[in-house]
Image (cartoon, rainbow, N blue to C red; front, top):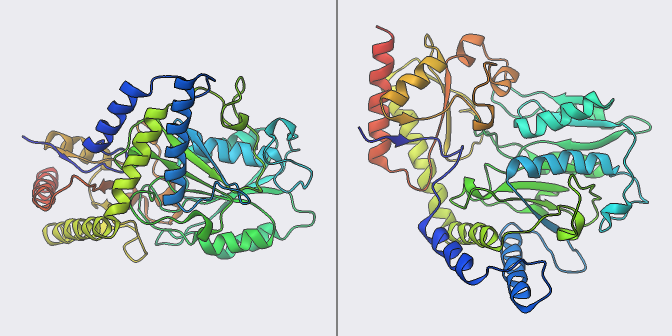
Length: 402
């Protein structure tokens, strides 16, 4: 039985054009970009060209006088950790810190950090680490549709003196696909002179993302979510936002993320974004059509299913569905045996026995939370696959119900 892959939010197949571009780079640009000789400088030019292409597509300006920074990381998890710990601990409200000299940044006294209840674990756990170090951690709730409670933010920022070092709210939820009002939150944060970070890992390469237009201080992305290579992500940081590095032992990337950079991975990431940009409108339309076809098929075959966040604006590729009366873990294994690959939630939370914090924050009944699975389409998903997946899911659910 041919497997139907509906877990593109976890990772997507690398596009052949990306593989080809990386193969050429590995063969021709083999030197260390930090080396001073000509082969090293050639690698540096390739690396910086990829950096500039990525920044341009995502609406970041690396040129003077603005000088935003695009810092390559190993993926979205590292980018989120660097944002949460690096911005918070740099004391972003302190006027005496120098943005382009991380070694001059003083470690801030314990302050306050605010996140939403629907964040990825790579934001939640660094925030909880700060909590263990004596910081205060506040959480913005979610509506029943999974949208962050914007009204809860201003009172948390309106304290004298303000101890808030960072607010972090993701752009598109990794489990439900619900899009968050980041521009509105950014306006509130900017008025309070508090940096806002957004995790855009599930949105970049799926929908248009404009860093400057959002008004955020920092934004995380990951290449393997949009047919780029595994092993590379990026944190885009506004020019005026200080950042304390997590790693030490090198001068690469202005010391903000030391370590030898991979020109080939950067080229792969830029190539994947280039591809997406050329056909972005069609890409969004096609994914949304597949998602709607999938949900309509499930509702027709299983009338009691519940699609979480269906009343909110969502990512075009994501469906989070409850199957009342069934256990989500049992159903996940049964569907895998039936050749349908999906997930309970984030791949980074795989193996956890806890119910989804996002769905629980939406104040859903436990029986719905426990019976929910995430399905996500991608560029390689076809309409016949969707129809066959629906057929298999309906059959498996019917069998499990006896």
